[in-house]
Image: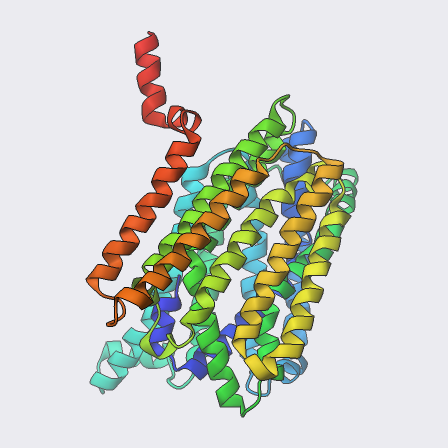
Length: 484
């Protein structure tokens, strides 16, 4: 969400440094969380005492987060020199604080999702983004402006105490620390509802269920963020050039945020839904139907972003728009990531979590091999293709294993059609643009692409009627009134 802001105030090399730091945080997050969130969802639907399970998980995360963050702070001088010669001790301290606050908040947020408080969950998550943006704006825009346009006065003196120019990375991290702490305070009403009682028996059950998710999490982070580290290791050139390339790649990666938002929002809602639904007799039919519509939505997002790509690219600053060729690859990669996250629910419900770890490790191996071999010659294009290869392989393997251990009658033909039809329309758009429009992206191109987008929507509606149309809230309400 902060990419449009950062790519307009930072140079590519500075943004590359930020990207490197924020690509390392997820590795530590996996250790801090150790699968407790998923364990809570599983056992809260399996056991009767939901509050005791939430309390045990919450206390476990508090103890472990505090201990791990204290260790990070004590080891900060050594870690700062190990991670990067440009890193500083205060960076590590800020990271430790962010990890502690965010992971203590995991269970209260899961508690909201478990009890279907979606509105409050969405409001708090949105507030977190807004708070982070406001503090970033304060430190990176307002404070420099005051110091540059004033030389005295109470406001100048106050800003002088809070801000010292020349280190934007520090204030990016500090903004995150403050917003994460405020979010934890705002979660106090949920924390008060959690029964803070420790049960060793419940904790051991949760840990036995969740520990394979630690392996899965590490492998998942390698697939998602480790390409930045590999780019720094394997790209030719000096450090500034490498960081600049990482900054450009990371910024263009964010164009797939439309897909990421869809899959992330779906994941937030889906995980508690699936655990709750698994008791129902028709659960597998529901899973099949939801995946079909999820495939259409993500395919439509893929097509929509690419049909209006120049408009989407305006999200990032002008100095970061040199890698738009990777956007189609990364959009499709994130589509397959969404499919994998959906198809991976079977091993969580059948307590075969190790299978998920095997799949993710396989994806991580693909990511590492392709990046290591091809980055020196192809740069960040190799990282994009590695991401697609990893996620598509993970989705397919998860589906094959899922059909053996937890058979669901997915409409694979129709799901595949929605994906390939979206790809075909994008190819048609590119071919027609190259053949008919010499001036590039003109009004005529946008008009043509709008027609192609409508074609996709009409074909979907025609194929899914009457089941899709009858499921719309307006139609359901009309049918109810008519029946009465």
